[in-house]
Length: 117
Image 1: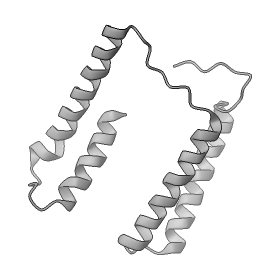
Image 2 (image 1 turned 120 degrees about the vertical axis):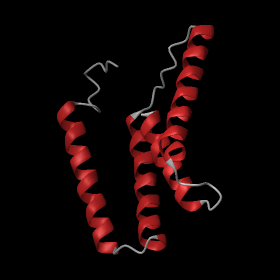
Image 3 (image 1 turned 90 degrees about the horizontal axis):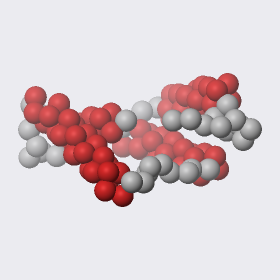
Image 4 (image 1 turned 45 degrees about the vertical axis):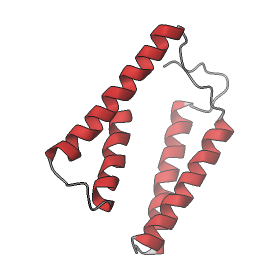
């Protein structure tokens, strides 16, 4: 998960910042270093504290944060990147519906099942 976020975050920074050269290290090395530092930090915190470090996110908070992220993504794609509003909104509705069906199918929001990680 963190490696994927590192790839996305660093690729945006490499693309938007003029002083950061797009080369092999910045495209692959920075996300790998970011992932390694975050992973080592979390392992260190868990080792020292003995805590499991699992968040308890309710379904309503998950849905609310997802809706906010979807709206911000649509605004960015339409306003900044210049994509067609119909294409962006249609794609996000399709992706949201597919995710909702998958979560319903797997029982993510079912209170009677116990989540295991």
